[in-house]
Image 1 (cartoon, helix red, strand yellow):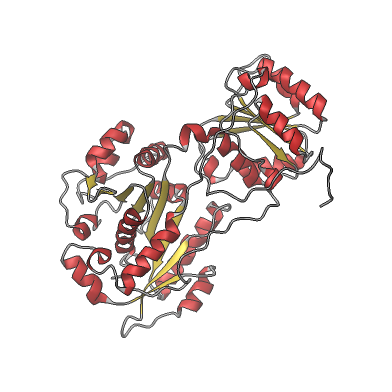
Image 2: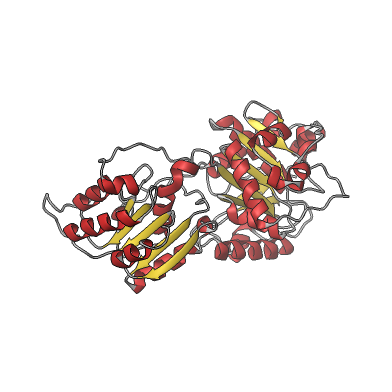
Length: 449
């Protein structure tokens, strides 16, 4: 990249932050002058994090946006592509501000990679400035930054566990990992058992609860943070449980809006939400998988497990193209007298590069289950206990630290009320990415039954 003088030097390129959280229900209007931006925005609009936002793409730039909002109310966010120079861009932004309702946020997309222009736009009240060529995830990240002040303080991380078929040990793994997370991270953990008719959360934690997930799901529109806290069982100061009540007379069929509300309330109550899903997918369990920040698929190393795991992983890769692939856990490796597929061949067949292998050791987990205790409680220093802690760190993730900046009081800033501005979005697109190292080796051997 060519060297620039002190007046036009490039903006600093900070490293990539923590994974993005879902964007709230907002209206976004995008004014595109080029096909490349239209295609990038179209791809970004179908990302799972944008599922609740309504994105409308229009032809034109600042002039067309100003003309439109002179007669209709502006949406929550206006995104405008402009190749104008600094003087004309600032002038047209002021004209647009006159037509927008107070509180409208604005993102500008341009070609100038100039830190001076970027700072002037932020001081004027613009929420973000993106440099072409535009990547879809740069757009998603910019929208996320615009609205995180009203959502991120409450939103937590969702980790979903699902078995490729019945009997893989996915529930046992989810319970132990949730307990490990509650001990190792400085945040609350909510463990929800969504296997409503066959859930084992109550057995594994040796608790009896009058209420559980069925009560939560029967009237999801009435659910709020206070009710969720009252229904959840506090196992420790940090770990809260929502067991399945296993009532065979009750059937739950949630709508997508109900799932969205459930996820929002759960996240607002805990920084981390561990969800134990049944292996048979329904429309609403599929919706939760698409909402999750991290997915762990547990399978046994046999032909049926490989087929189901491959189908599930292929579906998740296609439905979540901008997310890392799900984690694969191969359970009961080394079971006597069973023909198994080698872990290396299994992983290659399902299209992943790595997996976690769990050795077959029924005595340790059987004794823990019979006593109503978790392995990580009864044998924390065992090979299995240490491996569970390692996996808990790997799926727990990190959270982005937020800082506050003050902008200049001006007409644009009063109208274009932005959140807390960050460093340039696509100005940093060529920066080195921070790849958090995963604790432990890619193949960890421990037992689950």
